[in-house]
Image (cartoon, rainbow, N blue to C red; front, side, top):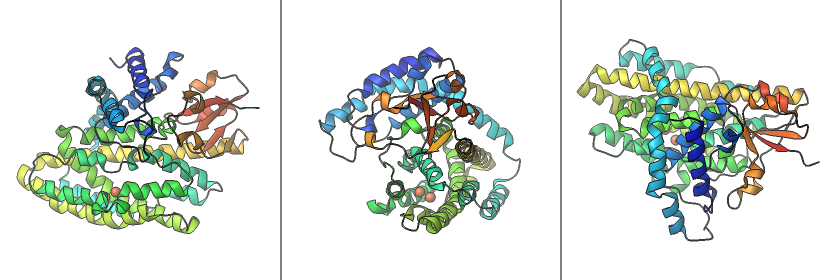
Length: 418
Ligand SMILES: [Fe+2]
Ligand SMILES: [Fe+2]
């Protein structure tokens, strides 16, 4: 079903759909062109995640920040064409079954056989007392941390530039007092109605202060597979009402973990970049303490009281699934940073910010993006002029150096000009 052929077909359809897009926000392309010349399974997996990303993105409102050249109504009608959305929806269940549900099964097996109340007590203590976030610790000991931070901001932007859109999709319906408590969290995520304080707006400010484009979807070509996996796991949870109790487990884990990691980021930015707008992190270090309490006292407690231990189990599965996804994304980010640093030391890579010029206007040309490549695919490159962009970090100048990068890294292959 989700074979090379099926992905190539939907990829062509998504490219056709993007031809008339006047803004990156309506760019729904994926990297299916890379499948035409390769049977690399990691590239197939990356494309499958990209299709799932496009399916999820099609289910919430996106408007460009700048006035488009043509009619916005036409753009909107074209982008949200029901037939196009239906084509993605047809693939969604099997993609979710293949890409996400094995992790759900693993979380079901690994969730401990204890009461949810004991689980929460343990989780809260564990998360609040853990050592400094490993990535932040790495940055502190690294000479070129600015580039590593840029990559972190880009990879995280997949979710954070539309922060809380996923959980907002889980809030509609009719489910008693917990719904109102969840809505209070949601309204905080949206700046309690003050646009300038909306979390995604605060995140934009950090990106801009690091010289990055802050438009949603602009950096999709630089997302690693692991980045998409985290994004898609969150949307899998919230875009399927059957996962309601797992959604609560997500919130339990995410709100609690975020207090700690955002505090570390805030301290790091204050120390090394005092001029950078770090309100995004300061706000979370504070408000997520309240969000954890709301989830525990006003959502989980009444759900347990009404529905019993069966839902406690499901909440734990959601928390364990979230933990695995967060851990995998964090470990990957750090591994890519280490691999890039090693390549720079070996004179096989150079640090460089992404070129934002092509992002300022309409859709970047495929040629300027470069073609997508996995570490395994790099073994076949013998062109001495080849260079590979790795996320927000810079360029690999000796292609074979990319072969040792962790699985789930995506590079953009081009040629040097000289
Ligand atoms: Fe937030
Ligand atoms: Fe929060």
